[in-house]
Image 1 (cartoon, helix red, strand yellow):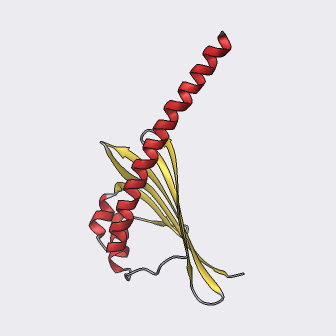
Image 2: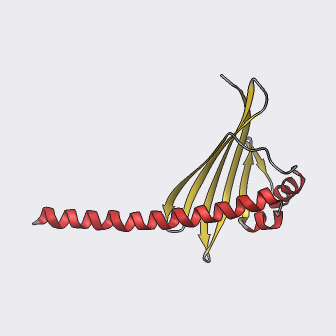
Image 3: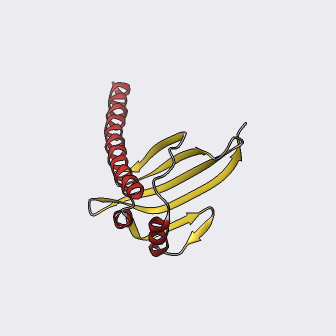
Amino acid sequence: MKNIILLLLISSYALCNGQTDSSVRSEIEAATLKEQKAFKDGKCSEVLESMDDDISFLANGKKIPSKTIIEKFCNSISRPFKTPTVDKLDIYPLSGNSGYTIKTLEYTTDDSTKTQEFVTKVWQKTNGKWKISHLHSTVKKVPIN
């Protein structure tokens, strides 16, 4: 009898967490897609709205001091973007109000080189809104094998 009760408790816990993970995953995915569309469309004020006021941002290992620099970058980057050969988004819920994403992009640079970009974002839900609290982007060129 104890084993059955324990099994029911474990199953119930797993089901509840699965629903939470699924819900958080869907919410983070929607927030990510909205932020990425705004970035692609050059709607930089919308991009900044998706970020926490005191966001920490690292670009290729260098700390970016403020959202103002992010805004300048967003406004200055040329559009439309090249179509990536790889565009993958992984979402990892951590709790009911936090999670992170890892986006992997690859672009062909020339016959012998490709550009890889890895973007990690930590998302936190505050006052019912998902905001990026940490962003880390690394871009590198690698030989095509």
